Image (cartoon, rainbow, N blue to C red; front, side):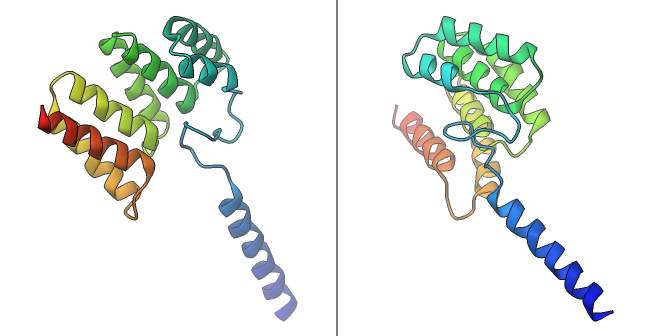
Length: 151
């Protein structure tokens, strides 16, 4: 009985360590476990080549739905001025992963850009719950809201 309990404890410890080592879901610098390689898309986004980024991300989207791909696709669409399509893709990303911090931040920024400040604040409230100790996405959306209030 003691040996069985020890084996069970060792198994639980392995699971806890494995979960702690799993990659984060934020799109900015990590990949969702098992997700596609976003290196090329991120480089195109960094170069602000929105059309090429959208094309690459649509290619990746065909391979299978992924919250990171949809978030980056929506980001690129928003930056290119296609707010309606960007909104739909942020929603699709959040349907796959409701806790996707980058999608929450960027959706909030879309709301600010389209004059929907209260909805942006709702995204900030969600980010406050997701990262009560603070995180880059929360700080960025707080700053975007503060900047919008100064205008």
